Image (cartoon, rainbow, N blue to C red; front, side, top):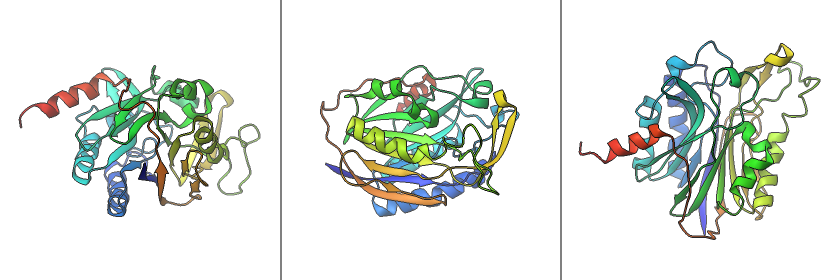
Amino acid sequence: MKILAAAIQMPSDLLDLSANLQRADGLLREAYQAGAELVVLPELFNTGYSLCPDYGPHSETAEGPTLSYLLQRSRRWKMCIAAGYVEREGRHLYDSVAFCTPDGDLHIYRKRNLVFWERFRFHPGRQPMVVATPWGRVGFAVCADMIYRRVWNDYRDQIDLAVVSAAWPEFADRGTGRRHWLLGHVGPLCSDIPAKVAVDLGVPVVFANQCGETRTTIPVLHTTILDRFAGRSSICDGRHGTPVRADLDPALLLAPVTIHPKRGMKSWSFTSPSARAAESSALEPS
């Protein structure tokens, strides 16, 4: 079967929740009007992604404004939405992706492979997540997760489609274009890896990256690059056809993807306790 998938590539203003939600809402509306059944937003789309003193005041539980907004849009527009945000559970913060379904279900995946300054701000996730939908099983990764073979081995033969939400930088000076001496080769990989995963696993991969200016801080090298995000979001239809890719500018990618469910609706998943609490409250009479 085929569904229409969308990848939103957008810049995010650092810690400006209102502006970022407004920007995302216009693009979500376009995706809905085009008939998309799945929409993917970048990593930390609502807060922006950069080293900042404290993400705590801008973190959210399942009852927070970002997830409430995404759940409402998912139900109203009858489409699944995956989006990155800072999750708070107790004293811990996580770089997470919320997956909202038209039925009002909420599933939360936590980034497992933290890099650079993220290790000083977030706790790592511990498990993969697979969610059953009417059109197949969806697996999740966040940015650097996708470079690790073990991440995709966890999903092999377990999923029918993969979602990757990212804030992947170019690792190059945005003024001169000069690549960082050590990490400059990493930036373009965000264009190659989703397509390789799609072919290797034989499933569609929807990759949504941030774009726009950023500062990339690498603590171990005591280095900050006046960088920009690498963009190059893509929709790769497994082993069918050629990937659809964005360049460096804001974009809404739309493309049909082919799904071949192999094992029906059976699923295994890890959902954070905050998501389970939100689901419980959603079932209570209003």
